[in-house]
Image 1 (cartoon, chains in turn orange, blue):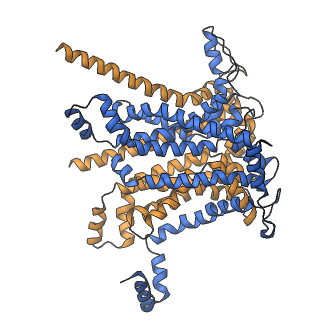
Image 2: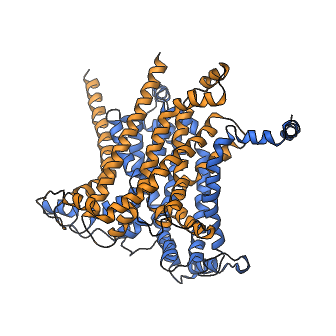
Length: 275
Length: 308
C-alpha cells in the first residue's frame, strides 16, 4: 500500500510538471499580447512603478480620424473576404471530401498549397501581377489577394468536418430519392454547418489581422494593420498598443465562439454515437 | 469503356450540352471558383516572380526580347566571392531558420506530448492560449515583444522592482531568433501534437503489459509514431522562417538583414523588381517543394477521424 501511495505521489508530481511546462509555453505564447494590454492601460510614455491605470489611449484611438478610416477600409476588405472565402473554400471542401474523381489528390495539393507559402512571397508576386495585368492596387485587389490565402484555409477547416460525416447518410438520402440540390441543401450542408461557421470565423479573424498581402496590394489605402505598422516604426505612442489590444480582444472573442461551436458539434456527435 | 470512349459516347449522344452539364454538376462546379481564383491570383503571381527575375535591372514591364540571367549572376557571384550583402544575408537567413527550427522542435516536443497524453483538465484553455496568437497579426505580436523587451519596457520595469538591472535586450541576433521561434512555434507544435494524439491508448497498454519501460515506450512507440509530425513541423517552420521579415525588422532594428528584408528592400526602396524576384525565386522553389511534401504527408481523413 505504501508503494502504491508513493507511485501515485510520483505520478502526481510528474503530472504537475507536465502542467507546469505547458503552462509556461502558454504563457510564452500570450506574453507579447499581455505586454500590449499592459502598455495600453498605462498612463504615460515610459514605464515606471507604481502602475498608473488609464483608458485614455483607448478613447484617443477611437476618436482618431485616421484610425476610424483605417477600420472602415479594413471592414471593406474583410467582410467580402469572409463571405467569398467561406463560399469558395466550402465548395472546394465539398468537391474534395464528398466526391471521388480523377486527379483528386492533385486538386487537394493545388488548392491547399497557398497555405504553406510565406506571405511575403505571395504579396510580392501579387503586387507585380497586379501591375502587369492592370488589376491595380486598392480595396478590390486586396480582397482577391487575401482570398488566395484564406479560401484554402476555409477549405481545410470544412474538409476536416466533412470527412467526419458518415458517407452512409448521403447514400441513404440518395436511396430515398433525394436529387442533388435536396441532397446538399437538406443533408450535407446542415451536417457540415459547424465547420462552415468555424471556417467563416477563422476567415474573418485572419483577414482582419492580415498584414503582408494587404501591405503589397492596398495602394494608398490604409488598413488597421498597416496603420499600426506605420506608427510602430515612427516612435512610440500608446495609441498603438490600445488599438492593437482592441484587435486582440475582438479576435479572442470570436475564437472563443468558434471553439464553443466546435465543442458543441463534438458533443452532438458523441451523443449520436452513444445512442 | 475507356474514358475516351465514354467521352465520345457522350459527345455522340448529347453533344456539347453534356459537357456543360458535367461542368454544372458537383464536384466540377464546386472546384471552379477556387481553381479560377488560384490560377488567376496564385499561379499568375508566381509566374511574374519567375519572369521578372529574368529581366534587366530596374525593368518595370516584361519584355521577352531582353531576357537575361544577370540578376542570378549578381546574386550567386555575390554569395561566392563575398561582394555586396548577399553572402552575409544568406548566412544570416540560414542561421536564423536552422536555429528557429531546432528551438521550436526542442520546446514544442514536450508540450505537444503533454497536451496529447498528459493534460486532461483545462486542455481547452491551454489549446486556446496556443491558438489565439496564430490569429493575431504578426506585426502586432512582434510589437508586443518589443514592448516587453525594450529599454524601460515591461520586463525591465518588472525586474527593476526586484532591484535586478538588465542590459538592453533588443536588436541582437538572438532576439530575432526569439521572435521567429515565437511566431512559428505553433506550426511545429500542432503537427507533433496531432501525430502523438493519433497513438491509441491500447498501443500504450499493450506495450506496458509486455513490460516496456518508459524509455522503451518513448523510443519504440512515441518517437517513431510522431515522425510524420516532426517532419511536417520542421519543413513548415524552416520555410516560413526563411520568409521572416517583420521579426528581423522590429526586433533586429535593421542591424541584421535577412533574405526577406533584402527582397522587400529591392522591391520597396530601390524599386528593382527583377533583382528582388531573382532573390525570391530561391525561396519560391524551396517553398513549393516543401509544400508538396507536407501536403502529400498530411492525410485529412486521419486528422478528421482523430477530431471526433
